[in-house]
Image (cartoon, rainbow, N blue to C red; front, top):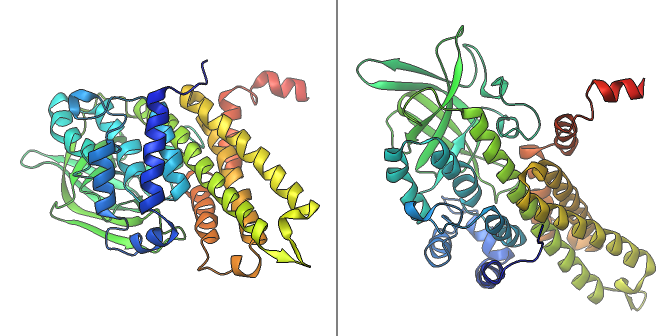
Length: 395
């Protein structure tokens, strides 16, 4: 493994860092999340048009940049550092790769170019709190327990001779669900006895589609409740022979690597802001950063963040390590956010302070994609640590 970044990768990171430093400060983030879309559409358009962020890891034949998972993870580290509110995760990390993996040539040609240019956004619609399980991060997704199951729960799909596929049901906590122009909806087909989960393409202006933005702890990750009332949908892939579970697992591994890098970027920025503050804040006539106890806390945090960064970079090369890297990144972000709140003193405990942006991101990400102990537990199961041999040794 060559851990050295190429000149192109360094340039992607540097350019994105400079743009976000100018246009995505804490006050810009707070203003953007209060818009109807939940993000700065002009900034997202610029990042997509000038830097190709929306289509960074999509093939060039569909309008993408043609980069690899590593470049996407590096970009996510910078967007995580700035806590950029954007459709990047839902569109470029989750939805677009699923279309590229499962879609027919006609579907890919029709849908991917506009996503790569940032002209449209997309999202993956999974019922309830099943996103982490659907992506294979906290357990096996093959049994479709995450999709609701049976006749009740989730979204159901029925095929009619006249109109094709019709969808009905609802899903909550859908990332960017209120603003995405394209939805990939996981729905049951075949009735209760022969139920099978497939993905359907639903356009944002489809008749019968109802979307409501929800109040969330982390405003930088907008979520919505999506209701489908006899909505027309197009089967992704054209027939029911697609291997949905393998595609979701592959996307989940990439998503874990990107989320790990994003968490590391946020943790690193929280640490840097805290270090800068303790150099200025004085107590007993001295900067509190000169106290040995504070130095030890920040030194331990620095080691934790650097270890998480190494794990995230490794996961961008070996996606099989994504879940463990994500667990380590979430741990580092939670620790960095907690220390930021405490070491900023009285002002750090106010909701208005920027330290709470990182605290909310840490808490919300663990709720969406964790918890950490399940990420590690599933990784251990996949590695065979809890297999028969391990139980015999324990006995």
